[in-house]
Length: 392
Image (cartoon, rainbow, N blue to C red; front, side):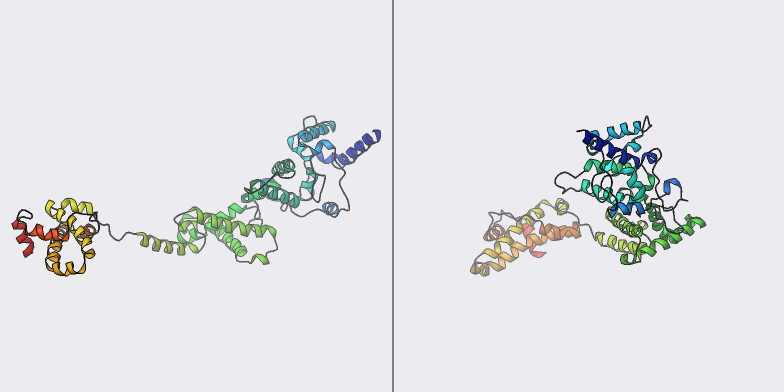
């Protein structure tokens, strides 16, 4: 029992002697461009020589206290340790920095050591964790989720590291010559404005036009370079970023706006849109058949409604009946319909076709022979109408 307590204290002494002095001040993060403003600085992704020693297992981290390996006791224990080191009210960033990564190539490495020696590995773990959390098809629990959540929070507390995370890709630093402290989002905006200075140059000052032209040239250089020829991981990510922004822009607009397209593609989109609008323009609006019927006289409308059943019944009659009654039936059945068509044409010419097509095709007790009887019956159709129909 005493040996176990002694070994535990020895582990704690060795573990905390690594970073006792470092915990009093923020970790030293190596940045790409120290001359850039503080909020535009970006951490270097390359591992330090010390990190490579741990990665190759030439050196290993000592086993941490058990309290740091459980979520329920981890932060409370780090606060006690910092207070014991002379920091009465430690910040949350300091407390998080004392937590350890219990997995991977830097097993048991403290957070504050990792951010100072291998930001690239930290970014990899956090970006992968973000995909795991947002994956709708994920099954089961995420391993060491609470540790990764705390590691993400710790990384976000440093602007130099936060800018590199996939969740904050808009703030990632472009870092190329002439645009060393511009973000991905700012370069995208300048790139989009290039076609505007050609179409509306009067809206921009001389220095703005010059900046936009340089930005467009710089961006297009990466877009026109095959991805296999790009050695910079940062520029590969930027190339992917621009392509994704283009896709999102095109998908979010149901009707393409040429002003939203970059470069010389604006003219092509404008012409395509003009053709599309022309094809969607209706040729002619027809007057509904109901409007035509409302203008017909009552007798003509009734005749037009009765003509359709007669025409529908006629083809189903036996062949002899059709031949024996064809002269009278054909003349008598076509006259009322012809009168209706002439009346409709005099009222509204474009809608006469609709009238014939939309005539009711319901069953009727009137047979073809009935038209003959109705024609011959003096009480059926007035004689004046019969004379008019025969002559016209």
